[in-house]
Image 1 (tube, helix red, strand yellow):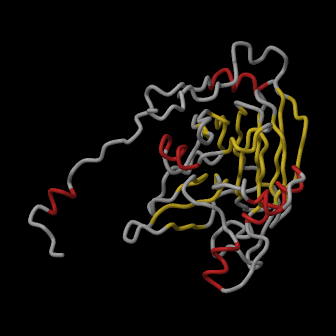
Image 2 (cartoon, helix red, strand yellow):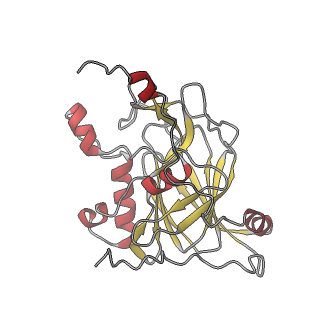
Image 3 (cartoon, helix red, strand yellow):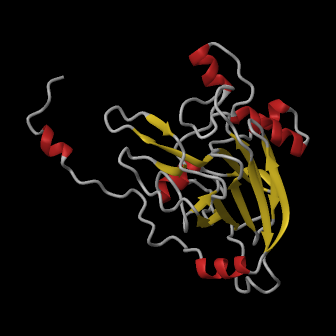
Length: 280
């Protein structure tokens, strides 16, 4: 169809933020940070390259995810520890906080729960911001590398992509059969991954992550959590993923417990109060 005469005017219509967040309950970051200062390390789990691992994080504790031996990105799934049906909702997190998350942003759970699961309390890559290509780190826009898309694009089966890694780790942790565990694996937060959308074609892109050993993202668990983290076969995602070609490194997960009384006044967020009557 020919371009209309008022095409330029239509393109110039200013955008409107879909979900203004001024009325969202805000995290008490000073309280969390003060509690973190006196917290003690109680558990450490190493995520092997091209594999995944699980860790449980009690509500009111902290989860630090770190790069250790070299630049490496990870794919994170979060679940309520006592209910796999309550899981991280990347789409709603993206709608509320934007395409990439950092300190002060929250990771929200799926319907009908829709409550904060975790709050980002420290991000050593917060300095990166948004680059000239529209790229940033810790995205909530991608899904996870998976064997189904790999089969479509290459005709091969690759079993150590993040979807499969998360599936194996969740099955091992819960005792569920692989096929059942797979149905709980969901869209991830791409830890340390540098991504965006091309401005000309709108395609999802990745580029070499700025993460280096010692960098970390730290979450405050708003509820009891089960975290499942995959060390992506793409390494720093500067070239490829879903293959054995990239140099890959382990990731570290650590749980820190605050001192008694450090979180006085904090209570876990309640599940969403919507009536679920849907107009009936």
